[in-house]
Length: 173
Image 1 (cartoon, rainbow, N blue to C red):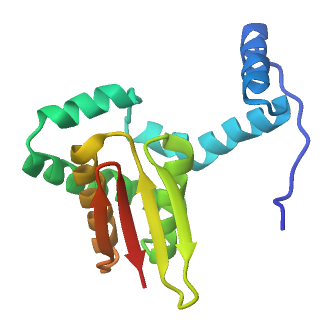
Image 2 (image 1 turned 180 degrees about the horizontal axis):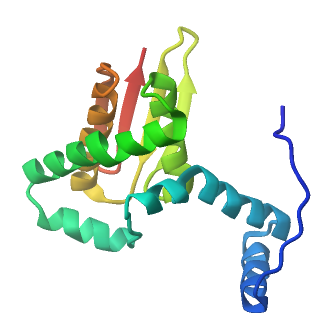
């Protein structure tokens, strides 16, 4: 069932409008769709990250930082981020730490942070197989795997985790 929509009128800077119009054409989508995507990104993700002082950086920069760090430090940082910042965002956004809120957070993280791409398959037996695809190499997988493990530890779950150079798979029963 599609979400209910509302009609509103806004005044925006002409240069911002022209940039949005150009981007919509590049993506081959309507201006309305692009603006709605931007609003959804802010509503579901950006406003929570802004409250925590998060910053945006290029994937190349993040990969270079990972490449310069020892694997054990990457694991510690990933765990700390999951246990602190991510947990705060989940609680602020959903009000509870649960399997549903963690999975929804991962979905929003993939949709709006451009950190990973997410794929999910549910087997006939009810097992969820979530694959997080990234471009950060082996140390990126170390980070994403430790991050996911720590997120699920917050809800007392130990999913089966596996990884390749550019992906992490999470199996939740």
